[in-house]
Image (cartoon, rainbow, N blue to C red; front, side, top):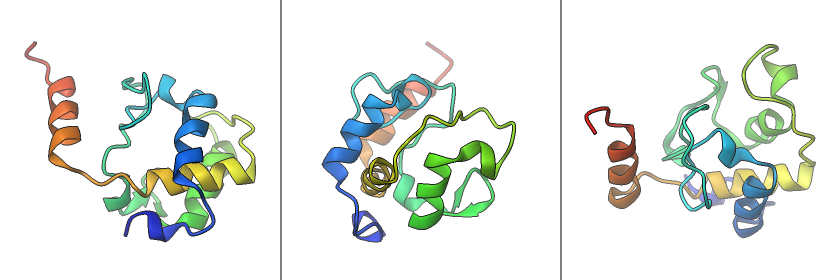
Length: 117
């Protein structure tokens, strides 16, 4: 798994695109500045997930389509269509597939999600 799943995308550009499109406003995304929101699901360990939106196989082609057209795939879900270009979606997917659960990010997210603060 990992970045090799999306050969056409540039993970560095993908990290920038996630910030540019405002994905950080709703998601906790390791490595993206200010991406510590829990409106949408945290994207920690994305490369290890089996499904996208609970029903699509976690494969690059599906992820690119989900990023670009979430309302066409699952009308009425909370993720808006943001007008993401195909190139940006490929890059975003490439970045997401670099995200594997590791101790430092996992510990930080677990701490953030704890309710006993």
